[in-house]
Length: 301
Image 1: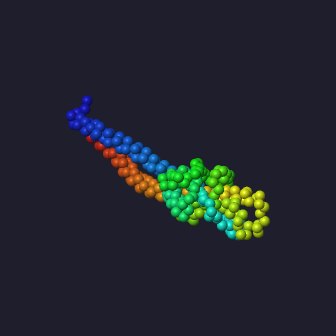
Image 2: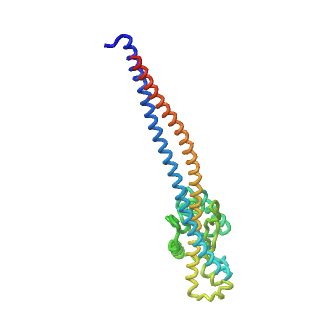
Image 3: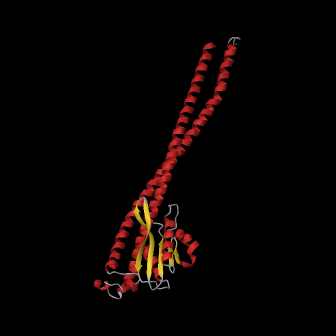
C-alpha cells in the first residue's frame, strides 16, 4: 500500500497523461487531414499540367494538317490567278462560314460572325451556309432569313478532304445558281493570333469566262469537275485553318487557367506544408512532454 506522500504524485502523473491524450489525438487527426489536402492539391496541379501538354500536342497535329491543306489550297488558286479568273456580279453571292460547334476558345466564332456581317453590307442579297452551331446561333439572331443551309458536328477533329467534299456536295445541290462563293474562315497567323479571311471559290461560268483559261487547255467537260474540286479544296483549306485557330485559342485559354491553377496550387501547397510541419512539431512536442512528465512522476514514486 502506497504512503500518503506517494499518492499525490501518482494522481498527478495519471492526470497529466489523461489531459495530454486528447490534444495529441487531435493533432494526429489534423495531420491526416492536412496530408489528405496536400495530396489532393498536388493531384490537381498534375491534372492541369497534363491538360496543357495534351492541348499543345493537339495544336501540333492541327498545325501540321493546316500546313498540308494550305499547300493544296494555294496551289489550286494559283491556276485561277494565272487564268485571271474574276467573280461574276450578275447573280447572287453565297457566303460559307467555316465555324464549329465548340466554345471556350475566345472570340473565334464571334469574329467570324462580325466578318460575315461586314461582307453582307457589301453584298446584301447573299445567302449564307454555316459550318458549326456557334456561328449559326450568332447569325440567326440578325440574318436568319439569309441562312439556307447549316452543318453540325463539323471540325470536331482534324478536318479531312472527305469532310470538305461532303460539304461541297451538299452546297452543289442548292437550287440557286450563285455567281460567287466566298468562304469566310479564321486564318492562322501564329500561335497567339488569327484573323477572319475570305477565299473565293469561282463558279463554272466565271472559270469559263477567264481571260487566260485557254492557256491551260482544259477540256470543257472537265470544267465542272474543276469547279467542284476547287470548292472542296478551298473548304478543306478553310476548315483546317479554322480548326488550328480554334485549338490554338483553346490552348491559350487552357494555358492561362493552368498557370493560375498551378500558381494557386503552389501557394496552397506551401501554406499546408507549413501548417503540416507545425502540427507535426506540436504532436512531437506533446509526446516529449508526456514522456518527461511520466519519467518525472516515476522518479518521485
